[in-house]
Image (tube, rainbow, N blue to C red):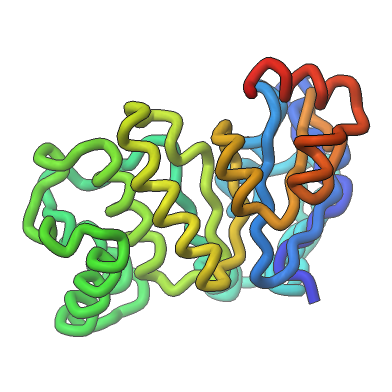
Length: 252
């Protein structure tokens, strides 16, 4: 049973087609990394999965439940908002920008959603947030405000915040692109550990070393389509498509 499945997903902004019939399946526990040049549609695809973008057409299943069947922008799937919200909560998302609340500590940032959305008690939320911040290497920064944290530390707080909702799937949208180079490694190490722990992950990134080392499957997107997909070794050492070869030559 797939945990994510999309069928003929299309997205247009006005007359510009950003996604063109994207078909992709992700299995539970699989790490799928999407690579490709800027403007390929990678982030738009990721955002379409949790409804931050509304597709023009196509079908989306999450955890084997049909969430969307869009025709001309209209979703034909009838589902009440509570049920839809519960399914969407199965996906945690980490963005390029950390979007932490500046007036709340690292601990408070991680506690907030479980308390407000899931009704978790303050005691339980605090215990879980403490455990997660320790897990991402920030056990000594519980009471620090975002302004006192480096970019890499803020991004690790953002990962802990997403994990606090107990998602089945983690979506990462270029999580290291806003970081100074020396801060990237700590964030990637946390992501590698998540992969080793069996988390289902869909990752948009320009970090080719991470893609090669951690991915079960690499997707190459270009101009709104999936041009090529395969095991990391296959994509990186013997790409079949000329455009994939050109991209890899430019970034490696």
